[in-house]
Length: 87
Image (cartoon, rainbow, N blue to C red; front, side, top):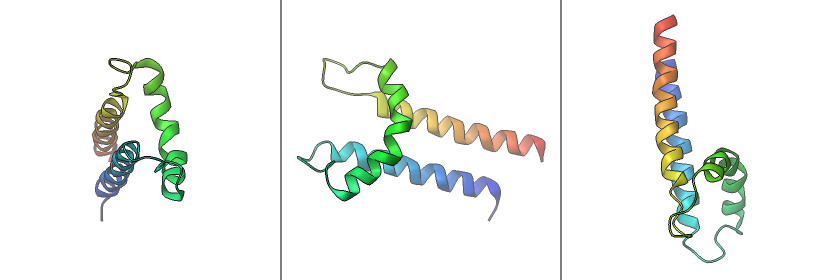
């Protein structure tokens, strides 16, 4: 297993965590469950800066997780490129 595959694996797991956390917001009281609180502690620190700069559309549609997923994907590819450049 190479370093690149480990980075992509970790990024993919975190992307799934963000997606599940966003989907939990559609279910009543799901974020107050054990899984919801656990995911919130892991995902909210990453999503908070995006939510600060990207306001919800029409006051209720939050697109900041989409932007956060795109940035996470770009960061993982950038990190792999940097590692490939120096190795």
